[in-house]
Image (cartoon, rainbow, N blue to C red; front, side):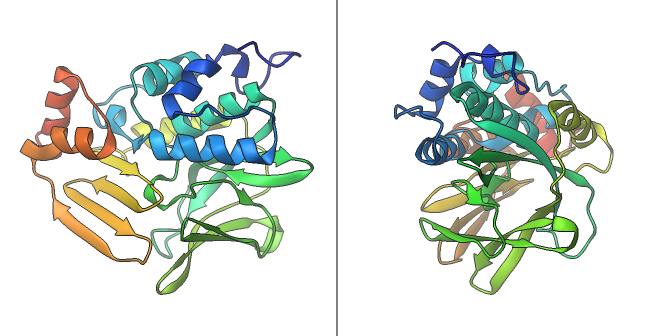
Length: 281
């Protein structure tokens, strides 16, 4: 498919093999830059490409240029974390013809601790209305875009999300749990660019305080069940809030990545991940 006519775009959409990306996520619908397409592409991406930090755990460099993302997440059928996921989604949406901007968010899902702005999200404008698009928040994230309007509430296959606006125009994404509303993250209406994603990516992939170092993480949100592997714990969460937890030992790690998350590390990667999982690095 030829790129949208015009100048080179911010997210490198003209470099993306859109047909290969759409095949990767199993999408064969229309490609008009409208809300129906945005919703369908977003959901297909989220439900297909797993959130994972395996390259970070292995001490590898994370590249965010469109060619590298396509080679890893599309051709090699791997996953990635928020900077990779949302940079790839941004390139695809831009290639289709959407107006896409970046934002930087503070994670609030870990309690009251003040966290740095390290989560990358997207804002897509459709018909003059802004929508939050985020394929990179793991098991807790939305399946489809969420309207950026104060008081907005959407239900996606039983999973309920809401948006609030705080002082200084800060938007907060919330999820409705059995115990009530819980904040997921918050972000200011300040446009970020790919170079800003690069800076956050550097921190998350190399800073000693990054939660992505020294452990294996893989998530896959789904309509019926959401699954998360963090260190040696595999958690499955249902719409009603019930959950099942079990331990994943080093001898089960590679099979779990394959069977639960659709991730197939090669022999060298598998050996390295088992070492990380065992605490031998």
